Every structure is written in structure tokens, then in C-alpha cells.
Length: 323
Image (cartoon, rainbow, N blue to C red):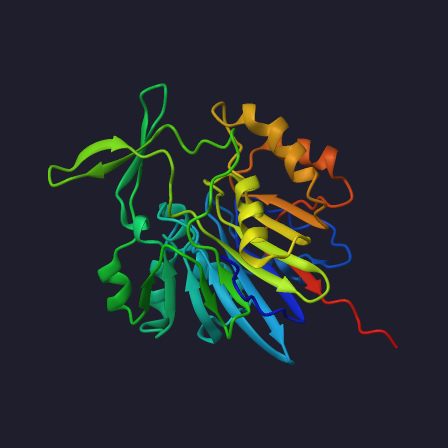
């Protein structure tokens, strides 16, 4: 199936929340770091946490329209950073949750507490409602509570549960839906379990089928793909976006690649080789990518690699018309 994704004139992707923050990091063409004020020490500071949130703003025929993709972890963090960056959340056209893990939706609580009923569509995969936890090889456990469908609707959001692709903003923003798994080495999250059945017993849940990403097609440049954690595997994420849209060029790949820790680091060589073969113009490995994978990507794709930092905006513009 091919989705008719309408090309845009430009897209800006702003990291509202991530686990990395460097206020002195240099910008470059198409990469705008958060601006420092002279009296910066007297201002509220941006926060970083183990969560992810991105503001994706498309420009079409002179109009700008924004989608919030993920909400970070803490009830404080998302709205705090929006305030510091002076981003007006009342202008949002939609909210998308990448998957049901709390570090991608927990901050919506603070957003809704501030703004009340926002009367926006919120797109989410039905499996995101599963109650999950991670059971580490050491025996330690980490609970990953899901978002509450009832709580979201009570706050005025129109919850759209969809397993397949969804188009937003007049067909210019694609929510991928469930990602097709085609690689042999991206095998999910083997330490994840979910409650199942009336008894609520914990059963293996390695695949995280609710993992979905945002895709925009910049005219004459190609796809910009934003992915929260890429539990489907970042190579699968890219290939799925190419398959859905019929567009092979990838102008930008931003988000978590989930290659951190002992379970996933063995996947780095194959992943980096396959990602490097795509020919991506700009790659921003954030959130759960892990330092070993970040270093490998930077070595392999030095001209494309950009270090993420909270408050950074990545700009992608269509090629100017000739003449």
C-alpha cells in the first residue's frame, strides 16, 4: 500500500525533550540551537530527562501547522520546556504518541493541566494501552504504565486508535502506524512483558507493535522521519517509510534508535551499515540510541551526523525553484 503524502515546502523539528542538553553547542546551516540571553542565569533553564518529545511544524503555501510528537516523561518537563522556548501549545493541530511507554506520554499530564480541554485529535496505536514492564537479566524490574484512554478523552482530546497509517494536516503529515518488520536482526525488546487476560498475568511482549513514527515529505528533498524509540528497529522504520510513501530519498532521520545497553549494542554494526547505505542527508540519533551507537554513526556518517540537544530546531527546506 502506498500513501498519498502531500509534499511540503518546509518542516522544522524542534527537540522539546530529550536526555541531552548542551547550552553552548554550536549550530550550523539548518540547525538552530536554543538562543542564550545575556542574563541567562536569571532565566528558567531548559530541562533534559529520559524522555522524548518533538514539535514538528510543516509549512505549506505559506501556512505553518504544528504537531506534537510524544510528551516526554515527567508531568513537569514538557510544559516547562515549552514555556522556556515560548512555544504556544494552543496552536497545535494534533498530538501523536509514538508508543505506550511512559517516557513518551507522561508529560502530557502537565500540558493538559495547564491548557485544559484542547479539543485536538490524538493519534495512538491500540496496543499502546498495554500495561508493561521490563524484567532485566539482573532481576530488576521497571514498570512502564500506559496512557489512560479515559483520562485523555476527559481532557477534551479526540483519541484516534489506528493500527495502520494516518494522515494529518491535509495529508502532509503521516503517522506510520504499525511498522513492517523485515530485517533479520531487529528482533524487538526481549526483556519486555505485558499483562494479559482476565487474570492479568505477565506474558512475553517483545515486539512493541504500537511503535510508530512521523513522516513528512519535503518537496525535492525527500522524507524527514521522526521516531520516538524505534522499537521496530530503526532500519525497519526507514524502510517502512520508504515503502509507504514510494519516496526513497531521506532528508532527515531524528529520534531514538534504541541501541543502548548490552542487549542492543551487538546490533550496532549491522544497523549502522544499513543506515549508512540509505544516503541520509542529516541524522540526529537521540533519546535511547546509546553512546556506542552515536559514536559509530558519527564515524560512519560524519557529514550527516548532528548531535542532539534539547531546544534545537532542525530545518529542512525545499530546493528553491530555478530562475
